[in-house]
Length: 108
Length: 176
Image (cartoon, rainbow over all chains, first blue to last red; front, top):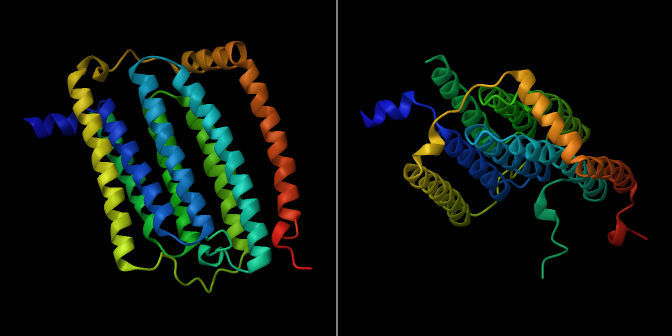
């Protein structure tokens, strides 16, 4: 009976686990990929995962503040994507490549 | 019953396309799969009753941000994309293992914590789209209006900064 109630009753924990899975996929993208733009996509994936948990808590605690926070997070994520892509364009103009294995000037 | 099926379908779509973002070597396909993830997340927001946020998610993420990503990808000539993944099998395995341990920790913590406070899990009364959007608008424009204005200033700064950054000639690494 445990397994069927897990499948048929969607609660807060389902959304939170889904959010955790998406967050970890974003982390894996940032860690594993070498293309700067794909790394930025991983950051966006992490921000979206956090948004899901904000909205889920907002629904299950019946408060609107979570949606407000998601609004702010979205705006700042859009700004961050714009700046990151501008940095990518700037890097591409210098190195003709957006693969991070060429950016080793900061290596000690 | 319908909402259960919708949730599992959306979970499948978001997790599948999220995995595709990690695994596909071609960045264009990554961007398209990320767009699919954003659409799935937006539909999840609808199932959670956040209708306005779902619309904003579609417009801002699936519309603006992903188009920006795809345009920048098209701008670069990435046909010769090699080494999409970081080198080293051992470090790669360690990274994947760390990601797996992190997801297991988070999921375990969530399930164990929510088992103790079961009152949170019970769904609350449905609100109409107009009511929830009205409440969000009141909160945004009455109680948090200064934060909203600060966001406007931030966006102005970001617009100017992005243009100047994309026009810069290499900064400290400029060729003389």
